[in-house]
Image (cartoon, rainbow, N blue to C red; front, side, top):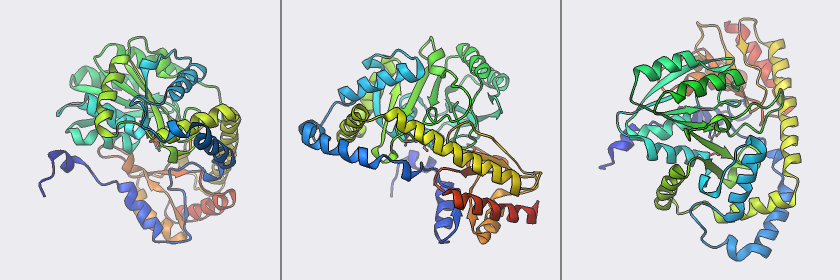
Amino acid sequence: MNFSVRMSRIKPSAIRDVQKKISQRPGVISFAAGLPDPDLFPLDDLAAATEETIHKHGKVAFQYGLTKGYGPMIDTIIHRMKSKENVEALPENIIMTTGSQQGLALCAMMLLEEGDIVVAENPSYLGGINACRPYGVSFIGVDTDDEGIDTELLDKILRENRKVKLLYVIPNFQNPTGKAWSLKRRIAFMEVIRKYDVLVVEDNPYGEIRFEGSPVPSLKFMDTEGKIVYLGSFSKVLAPGLRLAWICATSEIIRQAELIKEGWDLQCNQFCQVQAVEYIQSFDFEAHIKKIQQRYKSKCNLMLEQMSKEFPENVSFTRPEGGMFIWVTLPEHLDAGTFLDIALEKGVAYVPGEFFYADEGPKNTLRMNFTTVSEEKIVEGIKLLGQALHGVC
Ligand SMILES: Cc1ncc(COP(=O)(O)O)c(C=O)c1O
């Protein structure tokens, strides 16, 4: 078959292979998922909002809508950008997307040419990197520490590589590490990017799931030059199945995104937009988000406690203040990919960290999710993983 050159650049997801391996072993306690806790979906409230959507707004909800998004939904986003991020947005600064994954794909198509360079954190969300792959770009990973991206290294990379067009960053409770950038690092980052002709995609699906510490301003809030393309999503605070997310950027960028979206899918799911607005207007969404924060906090703390108790001393891990993931670093000689088979034998699973690097990454890291497994299974699973680790460390 004569597929396009773009297709040859797309890589199959290594994480999916891991998931497949895990699914072949029923009963395994899996920390490999990247999903929100389904027990927290507000099903009764969503059922009531769905009734209203059909009976009160059915003729709008089942009809085609605007490519940019349903008017009351755009108003809701403008309000949330102000209340959550202190960002003043106008309707021309917002477009709804089918998940922020589509926002990433839109940005990639809009901006990238063959030969361009994309800079991302090391490690980063594979879906963001994969969205750029079809366009024949290369990647440079910038290391991060506990405060965020290494801005000195970033400055050097941008100075030496004039073909960098796009920076992809996740400053809040990053997938996969769970780390959040400090305010000082965000300020330093903005100072660096001001010097170069680049755009930054600030992907923020986890920002509202802060369960420890104080909120830190987004890059978008600090942006005076329209260089930040902000991606927000309802996936982690409401339900990913709705596939509702948005881009907040300059009107020029939003117009381009709208043109692309017209050719891709005309618009986001109209029913889900009406349904989500109905839910947000009729129920206490903020109380729901607080419930998610409390539940994730207690699960995260439990997992950290168990890791401290059960893991060998030469295994270290991040202590996230929000989000859904903990990043574990094994002694250097260990390969988390090979060790996965030993862990699976024991009855426990995770995702090897090397898959979260655009190019080669260290082999001794792994990602653990704490949102989908019950408290009981967290205790049991970490004990098993600890036993397996003591056997090799
Ligand atoms: C960092 C990051 N960006 C984007 C996405 C995609 O989210 P959405 O469901 O909004 O498409 C995910 C999903 O896990 C993610 O972790």
